[in-house]
Image (cartoon, rainbow, N blue to C red; front, top):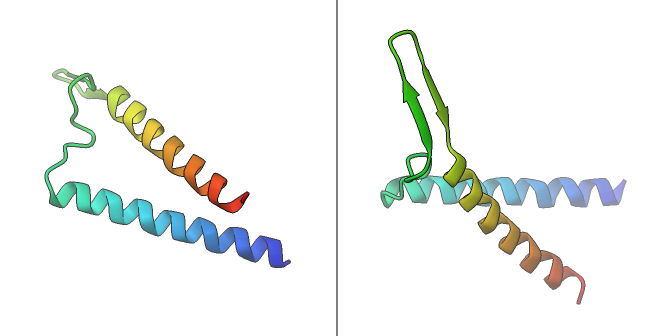
Length: 75
């Protein structure tokens, strides 16, 4: 049970940090979701939006952060 509680607390901290990062990105004008390379098609009957570059950037940033965290816990 202690392991589950620990994982839930770590997950909560990660979610709080991610939410704070997104909030600060919006405050400082970083255009997450509107980067060059994001696909946006608008027509008369609807629209399609696929944030491919934003997804790649977030994936790279989260990979670096999680690798740092994992290396800190394994020492």
